[in-house]
Image (cartoon, rainbow, N blue to C red; front, side, top):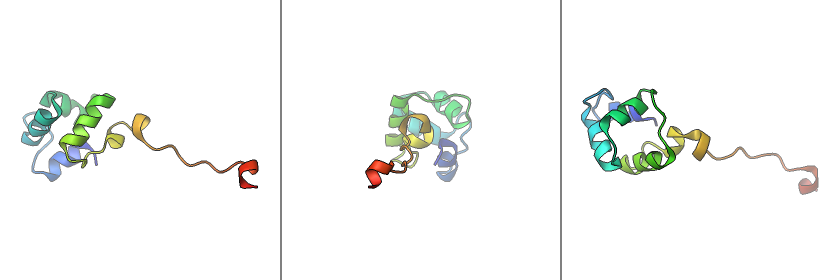
Length: 85
């Protein structure tokens, strides 16, 4: 789930001044404005902040959803002919 959806499902708006973003920001030790920019796609969070957001939301917002380029699982490749034999 992304941060915007998390806010909306928890009674927030994901806009500046959103109380849900404020609560997550306190737990994630960052500013609500930073989370607003991440939620709206204006900014990409770093890997450390992605982990903090994941913990702050009880894993509802997964770090792999925030940064799939860093945390997503690699696709399983087909075994080579040697491995298959």
